[in-house]
Length: 117
Image (cartoon, rainbow, N blue to C red):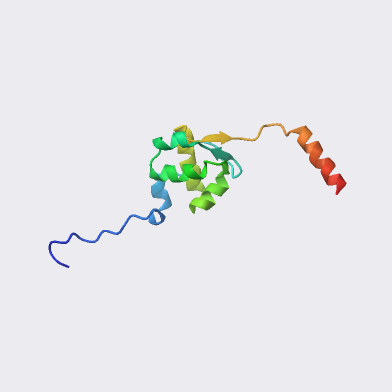
């Protein structure tokens, strides 16, 4: 190595970042996010996000579940929940929770369809 050359610094690969570093050491999400909770966003909100957030938001351009996001981002579920919770707090993604009461008309149609089989 010549004296004029700066020392080699490896490129920063997001896959090499430890999960706890992405959350700043936080392990608890501010929002209760179940595996099946759907989240979505639109491109108008993307300009407010940093690089890590934008990558997660791109997945939410079509509604996705917490489990899908975790799998596609290849990060642990707990870390995904913390990061998604941050996005919800910043109003960068919308949460789509199922209603409290089941849709009885839909359940009756499903039951009718099953009886026909």
